[in-house]
Amino acid sequence: MAPTKKYYTISIPAGLFWKLYVPAAIVLSGAAVIAGFFFIDLLVMPRIVGIERDLVEVPDVRKLTLEEGREKFFAVGLLTEIRSREYDNKIPEDAIISQIPDPGSKVKKGRRIAVIMSKGREFSVIPVVKNMNERQARMELKKRGFLIGEIKKVYNDKQPAETVVDAFPQGGTTISRDMKVDLIISKGQKPTSAEMPNIVGESLTAAGKKIEDSGLKVGKISYRNNPSLLPGTVISQSISPGDNVPLETAVDLTVSVIQ
Image 1 (cartoon, rainbow, N blue to C red):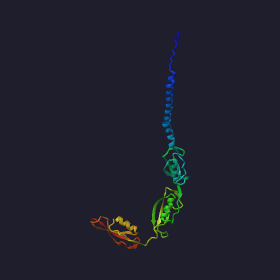
Image 2 (tube, rainbow, N blue to C red):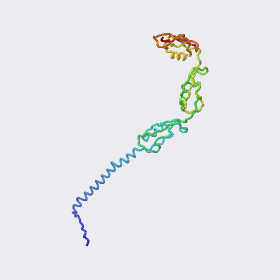
Image 3 (cartoon, one colour):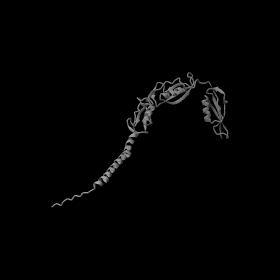
Image 4 (cartoon, helix red, strand yellow):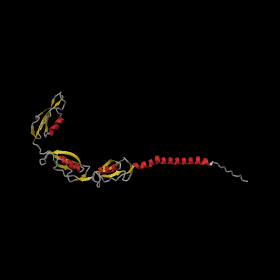
């Protein structure tokens, strides 16, 4: 014969149930609801909303000028950084070729967006700068994106002083804008005479340069013992300082030695 199951019951007085247990259950349920609300409101939602609030969409600034791009980035709380400058045959000079990150990306406010700027077409035509003064020629070449190379000054009977005789490569030539353009500048008509500089006390090397720069040339060099001077110092010159003599006149020098 199977054992008889026993059932147990707890008897709670009706008055105690309604006065104690029901209010306690209501209080605990309310506390749980309030705790859940505060947990979501104070911990969960700030994280979700805060993350979304700090993110902005990167606007498209391609083909805009640098200032236009900066203004567009600034309007959404982003900064601008120039990453590099490159030649581009389609994007005008000083316009934005590309950006990093790409347009439409989500990034945090305050981030710097890198842009690559255009240097314009890689190849361009050298402007004609002949007859311009040196300053005008430099400005015109720089405006076209060319670098200035060597400046050579020569006498020219037809071209006024300080004006461009020619450029190399010549105006009208198409070259890469990475190449330098040399300028030949007129010193005006070649003079027929030159003023003798004072070269006493100079070294022989410095004296020779001064003579040649004046349009004269070094003549006979003689040596004299002089322990009080460094060897190779000019003691005297055959033409007095300040005298005007024909161009390419030879100047004789006496130079010190120690014997």
